[in-house]
Length: 344
Ligand code: HEM
Image (cartoon, rainbow, N blue to C red; front, side, top):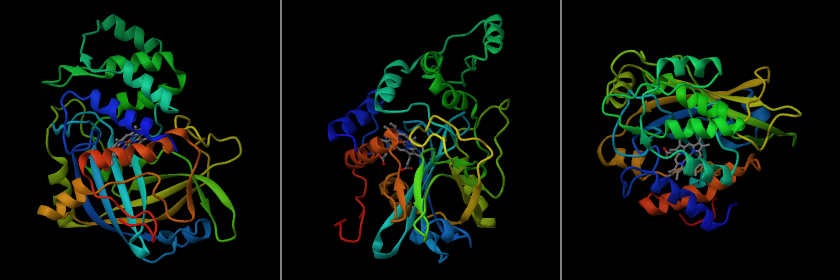
């Protein structure tokens, strides 16, 4: 675990890079919606992992979908990373969390990289790039700066590209951020937990794995050429669930000898075995104060894991353990029991 002062600095640099402070709210993924659901593990899940939510009994789940940006502007139609944070509610009022985004790989390997990225990728005015330079960018496999949205005067794009041009490990993640688009629905995107976790099987075998959520409705983005709408994702999800529950498959990719275990910027080969661990059904969107609890006061942590799942030594995962707690305290989010004997 990183020391508490580093955890505080991590959250502080995120706050410092915001255009305006958002007291009492998350500094990133600020806009989000809480949803209730049920998870049912597949038949094979329990043969790979002894964690309670993989035993086949239906488990209550809290989900928070979010836009990646920090701030109160709800630009649903802008190209942005989206989040899906999931809490599996277990016996003894404990839980296991799984936090994922639409990025397949992250763009920094450790805390020092994160601090450097935060220094380089500051918000700056969009500059027009001559079309000849855009062609030169393509020829050099660089991502040309995108056309800003109406009303978007500043972004971190230019700094992020400068960072990626200097750091090879960042290129895959930053390329994905640059081209990610906007989902038609929170239920039509796939979400990746990016880090490696170790799962223990009933026979004691431990395997390195990566988790992602695959939407049963399929992945679909909005038309990038159409004028983006600011607010549609909450209403779309409400309409969708009024008609029919939405579903996600929880997929688990199993790592092999030589795969990057402690580096979430490195992809694994596409040929790795993938196991369908279960189905999540989104059932209900709470209203009023229940929505405030489900969407705002709830706090997730990627290291809150049921026995049978362990964090790898990925330095970013270790750093998130403390950073999310610091952020939760700063915004007055609900504390949560980690183990049966903890006081909530
Ligand atoms: C050094 C790296 C990172 C730092 C410092 C960081 C920091 C934070 C902070 C402070 C929050 C707000 C937490 C709260 O107030 O409850 C947050 C939320 C979030 N982060 Fe990260 N994060 C990092 C990496 C990641 C990665 C790799 C992922 C992808 C899996 C991710 C996905 C999310 C999501 C989805 C949320 C919103 C969770 C919610 O809905 O409550 N973050 N992050």
